[in-house]
Image (cartoon, rainbow, N blue to C red; front, side, top):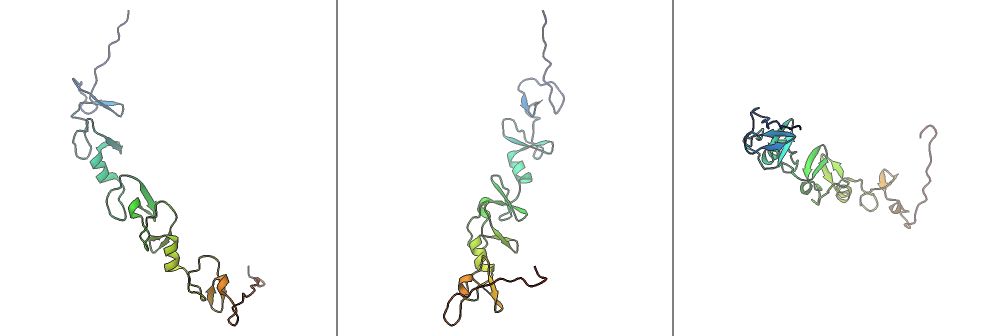
Length: 173
């Protein structure tokens, strides 16, 4: 007959035998008063915590000291993070520099470090058609020292379409 004797639990912090309640976390055991936040030193017993750089942190300290900061407001980001333009944003602060609509994680255009939706970008920064004055967002016809929409480049006399012939000059590609 063999009898198995279990070794007493030893606190990971003070290396003393634990009598009474044991906190078990990260595959280790602690006295409840020794499992503490590495930042504020308050006990974490029964609370949520984060592990960071070989230490444990209560949620408020982790949020304050280790969460990314929003480029829009400067506050810690505790939920969905949008990484754009080399910085972090709350989803509700990543907005178009023109119309202020949320851009979410979708496409955007950048100008001078600010994000813009495609409509505002075209309205504010795209080249304007010599014929109608509207933004040119696709191909343009370059003629008469100006840029034109295909449909706007017409005969001045009768407004008929002008046939465009593309040519490559010798030696130019």
